[in-house]
Amino acid sequence: MNHSPDRTRVLVVNSGSSSVKYQLLDMADGNRLAAGLVERIGEGPVADHTAALKQVADELSAQGLGIDSPALAAVGHRVVHGGTRFTEPTLITDEVLAEIEKLVPLAPLHNPANITGIKVARQLRPDLPQVAVFDTAFHSTMPEAAARYAIDTDTADRYGVRRYGFHGTSHAYVSKAVAELLGKDLAETHTIVLHLGNGASASAVAGGVCVDTSMGLTPLEGLVMGTRSGDIDPAAIFHLARVGGMSVDEIDTLLNKRSGLLGLCGDNDMREIGRRMGEGDQDAQLAFDVYIHRLRKYVGAYTAVLGRVDAIAFTAGVGENSAAVREATLRGLAVLGVEVDTVRNALRGTSARLISTENSPVAVAVVPTDEEREIATQTYRLVGA
Image (cartoon, rainbow, N blue to C red):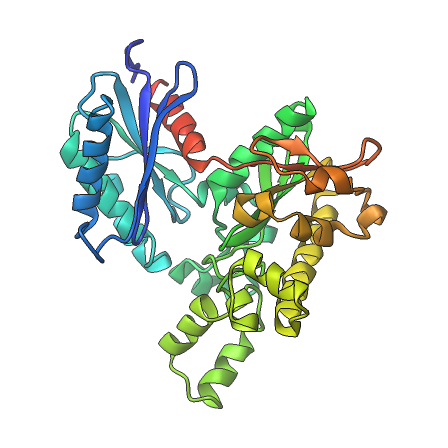
């Protein structure tokens, strides 16, 4: 499918459970022509995702960038879970959409909203190629030793129980940006990427290829997050059911929505936690310490997995903006070749930058992530193939 030279725009739709983010990019020069966010879907004037997507179309039209523009080459959609079926950007057909719907049990909070965004966009522009870019796809390169859980293989295969990983478009974008920042060939760059937002994940990327990541079957595994527990002894679930009398749904809510930083100190905003720590709040301090301990543990583990680390990259809301989190995570890791420049680390910025010392054997970078741009790049590459 070759696109016309005058069809160089890609609309990216990131349809979440209660919001729709969008970007319109011109792939000829990389310019972002428009970006926006429709929030609180179902709570107010925006009744549902159909109304939200129509609002997006109206906002674009108001800027002279209508969704009916002949310059539009494709629509790229974020889809959270691709299972083992989808490991590459995929042109959406009725059959593909049916397969994505079969994956809803693996991502019940995310895939339904992604599917709705696809259906509405196809109605608005049925003539345009629509492409699904999967959060899990970047991590599909993990070796079986990293992807398998040590449970009965037949049971695992029957129910799709394995480690898939998430935030894949962010990890892909950041690992490429780090290689560019260092002036190195991506194929020769080994990077640990720390995507730290309300959801948080780490990945070990060898030569642009993911070899391990912290999230698993669902986005619950791994790092301590805003409201999610991250790693926990599975038997804690049995204990809460048997001794605490909690139902499966109650435990699910506990681990996903009432744990992490929120569960430890009542706040899931790292800025507020930092303020409370400054006032001597011990609960806030403990929450921070638990968060940092888990992060440091993964940095050490992924150093061992990679064998050689060229860079550690921080991204997403906390990673990009919290100098305290970056400093605490890497404090004392000179043994791994990490030396952070405290002055560089304290400076704020909106572009990719190094915060390590000139002599640090391992570079430390802060890279603002751009998942929508990565989705647009993969979408345009596919429709222009």
